[in-house]
Structure formats: C-alpha cells, structure tokens
Length: 304
Image (cartoon, rainbow, N blue to C red; front, side, top):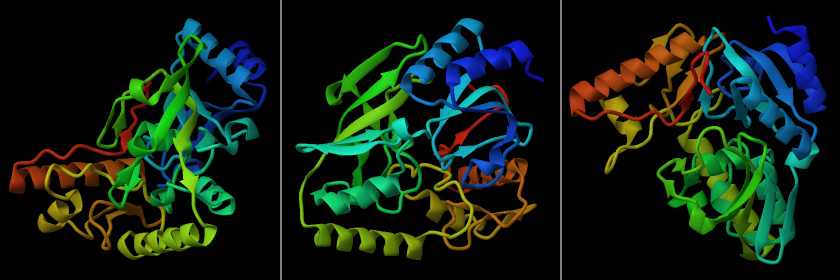
C-alpha cells in the first residue's frame, strides 16, 4: 500500500492521471501483467522532470513504458512508479525542413500517417510496427532491411536528476535492437531525417508493408518478436525446427503463424508466457547450441 503522503507528493508533481495498483494487462499489447504500484501520466515535460527528480531523491524505482508492445510484466505486478508519456505534449508530431520532430509518446502509426499527409518520405519502413516513438528509438526498431539508426538525427532525454540533454546522432550508439541510452535516462522526443516524396507513393509503399506484415505475423494480443535473431539465422525458424510451433502453456501459445511470437489466446498469465520463453530457449540451445537473447523486456517485480 502506497503511503498517502507519498501518493500526494506524486500527484502534486505529475499534474495528470495517477492510479494506484493499476493492472498492467490494460497497458500491454500481450494483455498480461499484474498491478503497477503507482501508474502515472504526467501532464507535460516540466511535470515529468519534477517527478523523476523527486523519485530519485526518494529512492523510488521509476520506469517509462510506451504502448506496452515490447514488455512482459509479471503477474505479481511491479513496484515503484510506472510512467506513460501519453499527454498531448508528448505526442506532438511536426516537420521542419528535412526533419520530422516527434514526442516520445507519439504512436508510430500516427507518425506514418502524418508523413503521408505531408508528403515526407523516409520512414515508410516503420509501417505497421506497433508502439511509440520513444520505444522505437530505445530498441532501434526496424523492418524491411532498415532501422531507426539509419534515420535518427537526435533525441532529447531527461536524466534521473530531472535535467534535460540533447544528444545528436553522433552521440548515440545503436546495435541490433538496442540503443546506448541507459536505464534511468528517458527519451522525451526525437528527430528523424526525411525528404519530400509524393503522398501517393508513400501511401502505396506503406500499404504494401502493412499487408506483408499481416500475412507474415499473427493477429491478436502479442508482444512482437520474443527473441532477437542470432547472427545468420532466424529465431522463428529455429524454434519451429525444435518442434515448438503451436506449443501452449495455459492460455499462451507459440504462434502457429510465426514461431518467434507468443500470443494470448484469452486469459493467459505472464507465468505462462515466461514458461514458453524458457522452453523455446532451452530447445534451441539443445538443438543448435545457440543461446537466444530475448528481444522483449522481461520485467521483474522491482525492475528499474
């Protein structure tokens, strides 16, 4: 139970929605997860900075989630303050010359629509990728042979002490599904390089990517790819070769469409999903002597 004086301090700084024991299954695309001790949607950047700085001085664990498309929250829930940057000030999208300016809370789908409306090309590969801009940058999201690293111009981050920094492309180190920004520093906006292109051409390419994604990947609640692809191979192929495509645990299932996805058949628990992840990793290790690395962020009850 959160002490009332602590809760009042959080409310006073956040200025927005504050909920106690909010079930995270409502905020993850996999539709599993127990209660967040405190769930906050700060009203704007100054409020977010005040909250982060205060939480640090109090020793309270703080984390930011996007649309919950790449995380697994335990059934027991998570301690501390869980923040979603969903207010309008974090969802802004605009264009300035050859740069697209985006708040971290802007949905990728809205960004792609905006690019079509304004006739700005370069981000078409993001079509149908779930999540928010902040999450996409943090994990170097990509598809069709392209990724965020190839289009990013810079990010603005809030540090644990509430200070703000602008980091240009040269100050960011990207790898396969990862970025150099450490835990405890939070992306609040990003800029991407774009160029003029006919809206019809963008729309056609986006539609093609979306259709291909629907063909290749399962529908229904999932967290996206569970494992990163190992060098020179594909996690889905290896899991299928190990005979686990369609395997179930409780109401969770390794997808029959793509074996690197776990889907919620309705009423799945985080422990069911975690067991399938363990089974897939162990089976691939036995068959191929390859240790698969999770692509999703598997939170513990006290994960920072």
